[in-house]
Length: 408
Image (cartoon, rainbow, N blue to C red; front, top):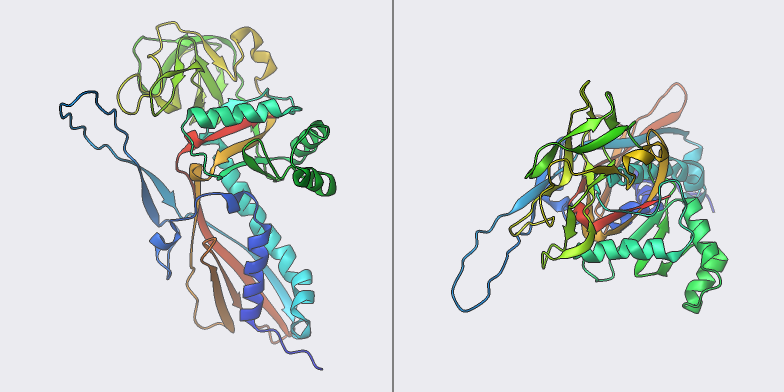
């Protein structure tokens, strides 16, 4: 029987199917906001402000004590349009969809999926919590259990939506380390046959080659807080070596400033970690103002710390005192990520179908909120069909406190 010529709708549906199966990190995050951008004609730069729930202190006793409802929001911006441009001949359209997919669609869509996941994993720079040791690949389950503790201490829901994404070496190391431990026989079977962790330690595990590498700033000196009772998202410091730098994504701790549980506001027993949210450089006198997350909030419904830092309180970078900054300064380390689904979101929107072309088609997956568009032209001189595949999306860290970086 003669082959039926492939149509652009068939090709686009197959491209969406392949994209859905190629995504790793993006499959495991919050996806509720796609419809807010509308299904037609969303344009690059469109923004949705996602409201975060208010927090309340509560009261003790029968007397009424009304609290203000303070809502905060996080912008989700559709500012990424990625795609792949390919060309095939009339003869190629006579292939079966399986052959066509293997030759053309799968390699093209793999590049798109890789870019989406890679962009999403760069949100690690907004995550403050960190476990493990920079430069040391975790070889026991304890490091990953500590990541679970971080999520627990930040009141992350225990609802089956906790995930770990790690790089290939981290995966190989932990699978090997756990090969002799008792656990579900089915999970051991998966690890043996596929070399993958599956489900363990309260997380669903996945490997992603796009797990980030972080380069620490070139820090030096004996940094300390410059001025008592500081609060908010900026910290004034001094004592740095002139020209020292902190990079967005670096993590600092402050002596005497401990973390609190966001629900009961009690001291969890260890220092609050702050992530640097913008590059900073010390001036000639060693002064540096640092933008940080979370905000230093020593009281109220949004309390994050046990106390504001004292004047001259010592500052550490990635847990290293100034005498050991050489262990991390200017060095690059790979990281994994433990997170609850609500920590991050990926939003997509339908791109418009242009007129005046040979063909155009768009297919959406409502379950995952994905939308892919294909536009085809025709070159009469070569009998080829140049095509473009496009996806419009945006990433945002909704509640980065529900995630934890894992040193490697």
